[in-house]
Every structure is written in structure tokens, then in C-alpha cells.
Image 1 (cartoon, one colour):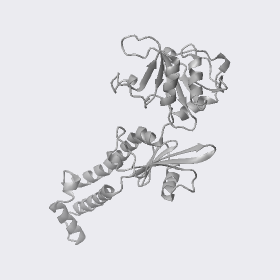
Image 2 (cartoon, rainbow, N blue to C red; image 1 turned 90 degrees about the horizontal axis):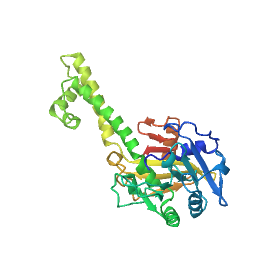
Image 3 (spheres, helix red, strand yellow; image 1 turned 180 degrees about the vertical axis):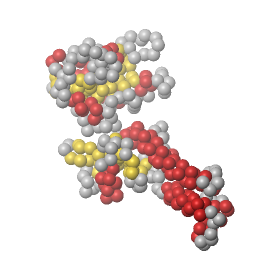
Length: 331
């Protein structure tokens, strides 16, 4: 699912009539978006009456929609030909719930066309974890595939949202902390001190230099004295960040049933969290706040500060705007 488009990207196509495909070269992605109402395909961006089943049997899509109570949309990249996948999603989600297809999705040996369901919830032990097929189910019978779709194509919970997005914030925070460490090391190098910051800043030599500054004992070189002062400033900043909280809230802001909603979980010790580990604090859990009035003030203030940043923006002691509607803020 790592190559699946974001829902917000698919929704950009939902109300824009797409042109017939002339060039099928990769890079010219054109998504057809449609849903089913009363068993009939309906779309605002394609002529649904001409929606063919050249790749995936239309009846398969209709039955999957029915199994999901017609509470979903389908989107497919029309440039992919025989490898076309039909992503399944709801407009208020961040990630697609899964996808369905029809074809031969085996590895090297042809296995024949089958009905396929793809979802991160599927664990197919016939394939190794590094294969896409590890998260696919296959069936020669449509009814069996529809049952699999109903079982595995489900809304993506906020814990999974955090798991999928945490690495970007982790790298951003690590880069910021690395910059602080680098500035301290450069400042120390000007006075001839090298090595790990924790060791240098607790050494007798460093203590003596700081003592001379505090007691106004003159240095032989005014320039050297200035460098010591600058180094101490950088070391103090580094120490503050070393002792600062590394817990962060992962907050998604979106509209649901016409109201603004906030999904929140707490990630403990973020620098040591990666997307293959459980990331949210079990005691805090996954919480949903149904209005700004319900959202804790400390979280609301930091989201407000980050909302004026571009996606990817980071503000010290505030947090990181990971995506358009996703924020990581310091707890």
C-alpha cells in the first residue's frame, strides 16, 4: 500500500471531468473516480455509462460496494492498463482502505487471472514480507473475494495513520537536533575541544573554562574568551534540548458529517519510534475530539501556530506540519 495515492489527491479528481487517455506513459496519471448508488455506477469525472469492465469485472466492483454498504468510492489510475487497481476509500479518510483488482498477480510463474483484494490487514504467509503479495488475497470465485473485501477493507484507524507517517517527523526532529549538536561542536572546536558533547561538557577542562568566565578571571586572549562564551551558549542550548520532552501528539484535523474533528494520539519518546513499532501511548489511546472547544488548549495553540507553515514546516518547541491536515506537536 506504500504506492497508494492519498485520498486528498484522489478527491482532487473527483469533480473534474477527465479527458480520454491518448498517451499511456507513466507519469500521466489520470484517476477515474466513481461510486455506486442503487447498483448503478455514478461519477462526476467520467461518463459512468461508458464505464467498462475491460480490466476488472464491473459486477465485482458493484458487489464489493454493496458489501461495504455503498459507503465508499472507487478510484483507478486509467494509465496502468492490465495492472489497474481500484482503490477503495471514503472522502473523510487520509489513506485508502484497500484496493481490488482482477488479473494474474502472482510472482514469476503464471497462475491465471483471479479476483484480488489488497489491504495492509491481510497477511498472506505464502509470500515473504517484502513482497506486495504478502498483503493480498486471491480467489477464483468472486463471492469469496467479496467476503475478503468486506473483512479486510476497513477504515484506517488513527494509530495506523501515525505508524505510516511518523518516520517523516522523526527525520525532521532528528535533523533539527543534529543541527543544534553540530553548532555546539563547531563552537567547541574553536577552543580546541573535540569529542562527544556529553563528555566534553562534563570534563574538568570545560569546568575550568566556565569558572574563569563566571569569576571574570582574564584570559590571555580576548578572542579566545569570546569563543568560550559562544561555546557555552551553544552547550546550554544543547543541554536544554537534551532534557526537553520528546513526547509528541499526532493530530489529524478533518471534517466528518459537516463538523471539524480532531483525532489525537500520544507518541512517547518519538526519536526512538519507527514505523515498524507500535507508536502510540497505550494509556492515552486514540482520542477523538468533536470540536475545537473539546480539544486541549495546548494542542490547539500549537496547531494554530503550525497551520500557517507550509507542509513539512517545523517550529522549535511547537512541532511539525507533516501533511495538509496532519500535525505532530510537542506534549
